Amino acid sequence: ATGFGRDPGSWLNPWRWIIQLIAPLGYIGLLLVFSVPGFQPHAWGYKISARLSVLLPFQAMVLLGLAGLPSLPLPAFALAFSKFDFLEKYSYCVYVFQFICYGLWPQAGRINLPLFLAFVACSAVVLAICVAQPIQRWWASHPRGRLVVPFAMAALLGGLSFLPDPLPGASSLTAIPAEVRISNHTVDVRLSIRDLGAPEGAVVINPSLLVHGDEVVLAARRHRLETRRYVGAFNGSQVTIEDQVWHSEILLGRFDIDESAWAAWPATGAQPFAMDLREWIGLRTVFNGEWVDLCVKESYVPENRTLIRHVVTGPEDPKAVALNGSVTVAFDSYPPGAGDMSCRLNQAGMLDAVTQMYISEGVDVAEPAKESVAYRLRYGQTRAAEKNWIPFMHGRDLFFVYTPQPHVIVAAQPDGGSEKLYSTSFRPLQRLLQERPGLEARGSGQAVYIDDREATPNLPQPHYLALMHLFDKVSGRYSHFAYRFDAAPPFVVLQLSAQLPLTEAEAVPGGVPFAFVGGLAVSDRTVAITYGAGDRDARALVLALETLDEMFVCGNATAL
Figure 1 (cartoon, helix red, strand yellow):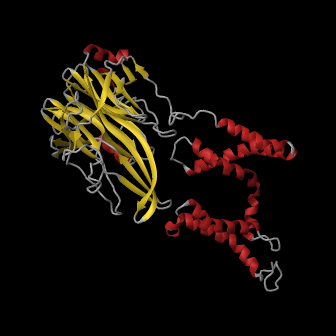
Figure 2 (cartoon, helix red, strand yellow):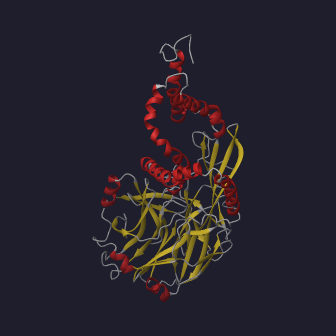
Figure 3 (tube, helix red, strand yellow):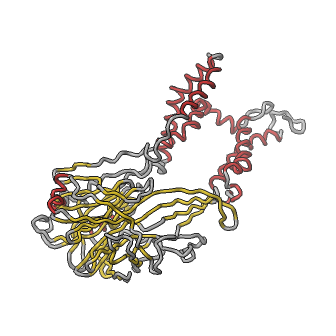
């Protein structure tokens, strides 16, 4: 290429300047598109149109600038990058196997970028040396044999298509053991409960037990996930709508307590009951409507024009207490809405529902179709999620632990009236949360009154036994603990146990294993801590009250 009769190698040739600048300008354009919001207009949202209209021209500039023109000297930018030509034999392996490396990464959705890039690079080197380069040599030295490869691959892929499909969601999930024997008087077991009328794919999680007279009441949550995608309108334009649906219903059941079998449960591991659960279809709103059509939470992704709607179909995570001689159920839920007209909107005008706490008195566990109204507990915030309150009875009055730290106590009425009464701090836990701001202290299950000096020598006085968990916002891990607080107002925290040995499981392949405690029951010196493992299994950690007391010994308790 010559410009105005100039020597191609001369810096006075304008084409030489143009070819020098093409690759840097292409890289700058790509950097702006991916890094600066102002260079990401909504018209580039769809992948194909973005590649054709925006990315492809910049990529072409990079390729032309690095390759140069035969009639011109190699551009300085390309000459500098030519020092890395030794990497070309590994680049294709990086391109092909980066997604496989992502799939093999131990925590789905949580990538440490430097470690991941090192993992991809090392994998590419190994695969290039052990696989790609030997295949390339074979391919070059067998011109006739390679003609068979396309037919062999077609036959292989066709044969693989006849293999049966794996069970959805089950192939990559860790198996959860039915029983884990921890000590002679501590066992972790799967609860033997049956969900009558369960739809396909539904599981029972986060159970809660209540010892009520001569019977035990069980409340649990039925859980099932579904994703729906369709095209719809949003803000006057056509978008893809993705409904992430959490099917959720509360299940109820009861059984007569066998005191001897219950007392022997920690030693034998034999569950003292087998229970059928039925859906609580009698739950009603304050307007006497069914608990359906809940408010939803929306978020919009402008890059691909997708409106994501988090839809929960019913109440979640029930906790049963005995109030006024009958069963009262507390639970959290998105607010019931009237066609979304009464649902909360954020500043962008999108639906922005948050969970709230509700209470329903006089629930007939034996007849879950009998109507009972639930009222929102009016203490707390309506613009932030309210959940994980710990109910407990003091005399004839109902209270909730609003937060474990500070230990905020709320008095509640069956009609939803509630007010804050006390707030105290447990200094060791307060210090831990100050030193590690990534931790949150949250409540779990119910609190149970204990007055057994012989079985609790580490706290030989009346007290409440309760549960809490620490949530690590960085790792997504849960750590569960028992704690004790005073039996009299202002209900100050007295002790915190060692971490509870719960069985954890991941909810999705490659996800973070976790457990979530739903309830606490104590009878005949047997403690049953009920929980869900990985949103897949209803379980109970069963131990003697004396064994749990040993977890509060200073040498055994969590060092805070």
